[in-house]
Length: 274
Image (cartoon, rainbow, N blue to C red; front, top):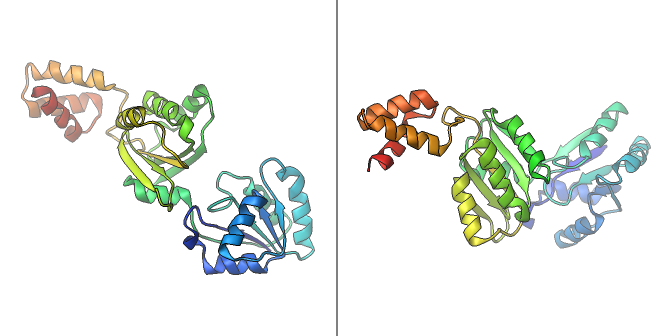
């Protein structure tokens, strides 16, 4: 049998008793990085029989070997460096090959950065889309973001600190000034959730420098409040309409034209009226 075992994403206390039992009893543990996992097992006091590397660079050559072992009765646990395996790693191909070879697979659930960040973001969680890491270059990122622009679901993206500034700029250009959260160092001592509009967060990190640690970006999905109108265009329309209408009538009129909610427009009407 193949066991898909979740490990902590930061706090060591998040390992489950079942996960520790499985790791201690299987014949082999396939690790994204055997050194990283070895240190984790040592900290947790888990003695494993043997480990073998299984990652994106050796997966194609290692997968047939693991399947052969499983066919001959070897029990194997698959772990990633942290969190739930198969999230942004090649584990799904091993699961697929197991099914093709009639090898049973089960999961040992646990910590997960995607779901933890979604919980902490304060954004809708009834529908969400995980995009993993986006391409490293702006053109590639914008292409992916454009494909997600109309998706009525909260968007979740992994990012590195040194690319955050460029990522926020691309998000602003493609998705507009949506509400979002930058979640970092989940379950660790310096865990932080910073919420705001895309531009507010861009300004914050421009002033305070790039954050440290692992980042998860959680972004508002497409809603009736998101339109192709820029802030400058909306404010110009508000000022023009205010010249002949009351603030409330202006909010209703501009809302109908732009597709942005009347509540949001009214806030901006008051700001412009003052």
